[in-house]
Length: 110
Image (cartoon, rainbow, N blue to C red; front, side, top):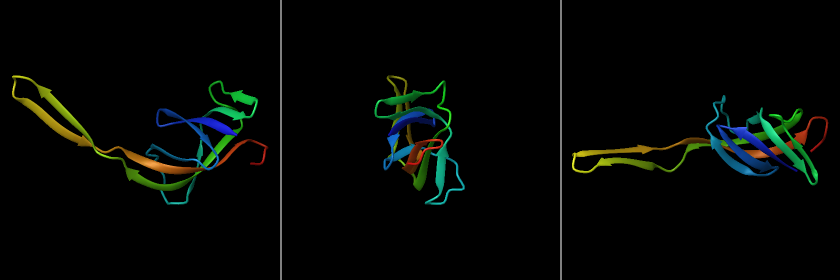
């Protein structure tokens, strides 16, 4: 069974046991804390596929927080030729690492 969830403006295809990095989620942020995704867009189990309009009613995806961090540095360099204009800036995007613990429809056991 797998699901498509939306968080941080992006969509992720997840199933039980997956470890994903998503845009930072503001939590009371303790490691091992559980988090439930409010937007489940699609739920599939073999040939049975439930597509949401916009979300699937009763679908539940829960995850366990493994940690928070910052990704590798991205260098932003602006340059205009012949104008003595150069700007160098770095950016490290914060993320939350999650392990998917359950993908289910309400009323079903995982």
